[in-house]
Length: 140
Image (tube, rainbow, N blue to C red; front, side, top):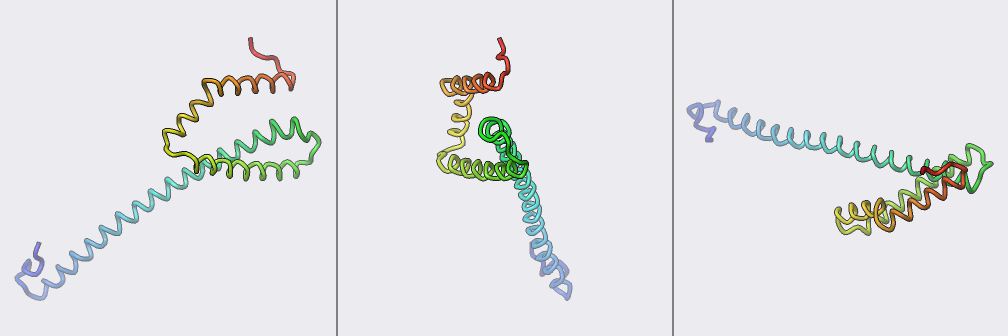
């Protein structure tokens, strides 16, 4: 659109061209800012999920394994520090696994392999052994 001739070429032609440039810049910046807003929301949700998984995993490691089998008489401060170390360990382990994955589908295949097949039976056997060690009855 030719803004110079929109008003007959007088003093208003410069104003219309300026308005067009301002509108184009505002539209371009608005789309960028809204995209950044959504990106920040997705990153916050992602980091919340990661933090939840790390805390969940360290809780299981410390409460169900370390406290039960390795150090039964530690103070709460000791277990808090052990949980911090377990969180760091899980973070490093997750980074190593993520670094070695070549595709997302490989990760899903590995995840499916934990629940089924040979690895799934080994995991189930370990769960049953742990239940027997703490005195729980196995389901029949």
